[in-house]
Structures are given as structure tokens and as C-alpha cells.
Amino acid sequence: MLVQQSSALKDEIMRLKKEKDVVILAHNYQIPDVQDVADFTGDSLGLSRQAATVSQKTILFCGVNFMAETASIISPDKRVLIPDLEAGCSLSDSITVDELRDWKKQHPGAIAVGYVNTTAEIKAELDYCCTSSNAVNVVNAIPEDKEILFLPDMFLGSYVAKMTGRKNMHIWAGECHVHAGIRPEDVQEKLNSLKDAEFVIHPECSCTTPMMYDVADGSYDQNKVSILSTEGMLNHVHQSKSKNFVVATETGILYKMRQQNPGKTFIPASDKAECQYMKMITLEKVYDALVNEKNVVTVPKEIADKARLAINRMLEIS
Ligand code: 13P
Ligand code: SF4
Image (tube, rainbow, N blue to C red):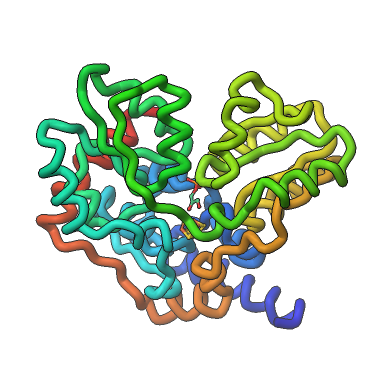
């Protein structure tokens, strides 16, 4: 889209959201134009918290489906719209409700902990929900003698098991294709190319596991390493005294990192780390959803009521 067209569309979206009393929430992986029109940007946990507290009656959620569903479950009295109903998530697709029920049958008495990247139906089967920023604290809140079923991300699961020292955690073998695709070779090449770079990494990355032992003592090949959620990354790079960073997550995060830290250099661990689902949300679709008040995300009440218990537990643990 031409710059002039995009700026006119942005002005119109800003006007309409005020007129219609709509709040726009956007995930940190959204394209820059969409982040620009948002009232709040953030990670999954931060956006869930915003959804619970905003005063507007309508939330236009610029992210993927499970995030919009979570907002709708937390705020049943609000209307949640998503610019594209087809914006899915390979990680949330990696477990079905039947698979989860079978798994639970095999481990009676176990506590089911699921990442927020799951469908509402899956959340209704969980004891606890968690996000990348509070998964370690959620698992630490569960009595040590209780078996845990952790799903669906195996890399986040291994990271949490390592950080908590839990031996009784069973981990589902799911993954996010974007993060699983960032290979240790990509990381090494980028770290070699940028002098004295710090390395920030999302726990969904497949390279987290082999690096864990180095990361546990705070370094990887002499580079300072931090494993963080997307919002955790933004806070960390802002506070750090370092000037250079290699960033292992979806590349959408770089927009805000560069905007908030003009004197620092950020390079992606892999240029190919793009989530096509997040990128389905365009400025035109935001406008269309707003103007026509369409693409309402609804979760059946009996599923939402059950899922809310696990989500509220997640929100209580920071
Ligand atoms: P965050 O919770 O860190 O924002 O991650 C969400 C996500 O989809 C990662 O791929
Ligand atoms: Fe899902 Fe991965 Fe996309 Fe995040 S980056 S929304 S986990 S597919």
C-alpha cells in the first residue's frame, strides 16, 4: 500500500474506533501499520490483562484466533472482533481435545497445564493456563508431588522443566513451526556477525533446548543470553546497557524494539521467522472489521465458563 493511502486509512481507523467506542489490541508480531493504530500492544499475557480491564464494550483483537477467544472468555460481556477469522496457529493445532482427554485418562490425578496458545475447547479441559512469561511460576505454584501434563509446546515444556527442576512433568510433543524453524546454525551465524551482541530468545524456539545448559549459567558462546516472552524481551533490551542484540523470535517484534531504542542494533536470528497467521491481519482488514462490525469471535458458554477457571488462574500468577 502507498504511504499516503496507508496514512489516510490509519486516520480513518483512529476516528472510527473513537466514534464506535472500540479498543484495538495488537500482538507484538503484528505488522507495523497495525501496531500503529493499536491502543495497546503486548504479549499474550499483557493483552489478556488489557482485555479484562478495558472500559470499551468492543475489543478489536489484532492477533490470532486463540488470543481473541481468550479475550472473549475473560470478558463475556464485551464483543470481540478479529480482522480475519482464519488467523490460526500451528502450535494450538498441535493437540486435539480427544488427544488431551486420552492423555488425561492415562495419568489420572495429574494437573493439566496448557499454554495460552490453545483453543477454547482445550482450555476448558485444563487446570491451569500459562503464557511464556509466567509458565515457570505457574508450574512452581503446583505442589511438588503432583504429576503435571504440560502442553502443547515441547520446547517451552523442556525449558520449564529445567528451570523448575520438576521430574514429574510429562510434555506434549507440539511445536510452533516459526520458532521450531530457527536453527542453532542460524543463531551462530548471526551472533558471529554482530560484535558483543546479547542474545534474546523466546522459549518456543527449538534451539532453546540444546542451549539450555549454557543459558542456565547466563551465557552462550560468551554472549549474554536471556530467555523471555515477547514483552519480556522488549523490557529487557530497553533496560540493558548493551548496544547490539540478536533476537530469536518472530520478526514482527523488531519494529517496536527499533522504535523504542533508536541507538541500538537488532538483528533477527532468522530472517525467515515470520508467522503467516499473524501477518494475515492487514490495515484494510482492520478497517473492514471496524466499519462493518464483523467477524465476532464467540465461544459457547459452557466451554467459556470452564476455560475461564484455568485462564483466571493464569492471570492471578504473574
Ligand atoms: P508471547 O506470549 O511471548 O507474546 O508469545 C505468543 C506467541 O504466539 C509466540 O509465538
Ligand atoms: Fe502460533 Fe507460532 Fe504464529 Fe505464535 S508464531 S501465533 S505460536 S504459529
